[in-house]
Every structure is written in C-alpha cells, then in structure tokens.
Length: 116
Figure 1 (tube, helix red, strand yellow):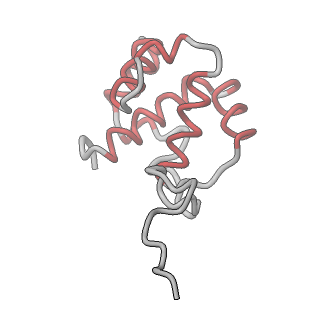
Figure 2 (tube, helix red, strand yellow):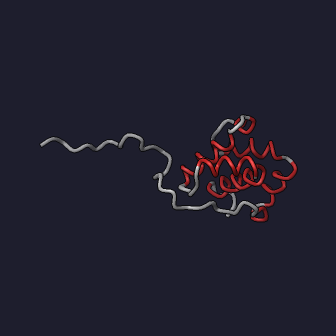
Figure 3 (tube, one colour):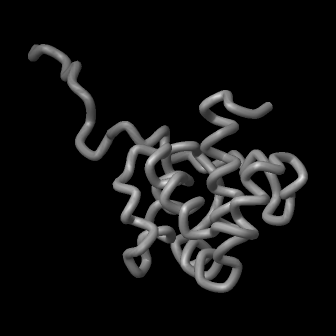
C-alpha cells in the first residue's frame, strides 16, 4: 500500500474556502456606519478608491484601470466568502460605482478592525 497524499490539493489557495455563504458587513447605502468613508466617497471618490486598493494590498493605481475595481470586488468576495457573481461585480461597480467603492472601503476597514 502506498503512502497517503498530505499536500494541498491543486487549486487550493489563500482565497478562503470558495464556499460563498457570507454577506457584506454593510449594505450598499449604509454610509452612516462609517462617516469618514462616506465623506471621502462624496467629495473625493478617486482617492477613496486608491485608498481602498492600497489597504487591500493592491496597487493604488488599480482604481484608474478599467475594470480594476470590479476585479478587486471579485477578489474580496472570494477571499471573504461573500455571495455573488462576476456579473454582479461588474454591474455594481459600473452602475453603483461610488457607493460600491464606499462599501468596499468599509468592508476593508471592518475586516482590519478599524471600525466595528
């Protein structure tokens, strides 16, 4: 009898369990839960997007790349086990862009323990 395989399966990585059972820590329009992010989202949306990308560990210029925030939203969902689809990620960042960037920034701050 041969020895059992004890290494990680192919495709397994640092992106959570790929079981999407969770939800975002705040709603799309829950700006009052973090007024600092809300103010930045209203008055300085591009710097907020750069801040969110940087805090998430990506290059801050990701906010300036077409589709960059949609790809970051997808990666966040996979990492945090949040339910959703690629189509939803693209639609939310395209049509609800600034509100979605605010929610992503709040999620990062929540996961880092900056807000409760």
